[in-house]
Image 1 (cartoon, helix red, strand yellow):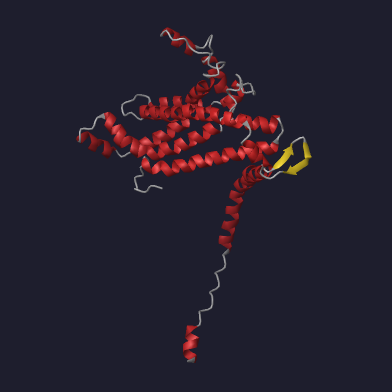
Image 2: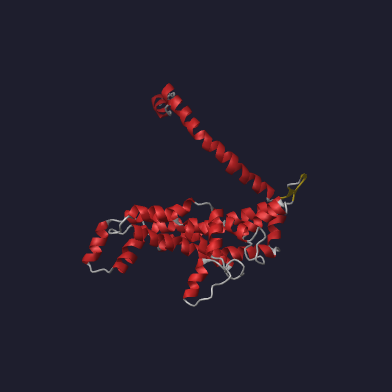
Length: 319
């Protein structure tokens, strides 16, 4: 009986082997190399997010920090009685619906062009299409301000050749948002490169099999190219939607920081900025920021939920 009891006892836990001096040095060097990123993340991302979350449940004025007061969910309740929130969201959604198709279809078309087998000077065209990406957002607005000028802009002159009266792009309430959506053409360089990388990873055997089956170029594009690069399209679609929700620079410059003409360029981010830094209502501004975060998060989750209907992964896995 004693023997059985002793054999049933669990074995004593084994001591973990000590780290060698080499392993300790590797850990120290690893931490040293990633410490700039960790410090930057804590200072410029984690801490501001935590501070913003705290501000969102307070009444806080930048010029009167001593009057810091906890108000609970009052700022969030205030959203439902603020007509400017819905108005700015409507402007932002309209911009997104106009700019996102441009941000996807135009770079896809350019990627197909520079991926053509018999195109002479491919690298030159790739550089030309990417170079505008290197220009600052302010410079892009200035350039398009001249291009779309109702009096001297060449775009309206081009329309006039075909007998079309061009609108007053930046002074007309109905046309200023489409004009800003049109400006996104100038920033499709990065998207074009990712689309091009996706196109170059499509196996040529699929196209050869399609030709054997008598598939037309359009059918090959729709049934082979699009499914094979759909993960790349999906990735850029998420970035385009998030970018459109955060649109600010063009709206600030074109609207003179006031949402001109007549509030038609008061994007959600513009309203957030004015609330926090013009009216100095940091508490309500932080609330607006968190609402924008949750809108973007909800949109991203929705896109991930519906991706299995059209996104194809070569491994057969769909998440």
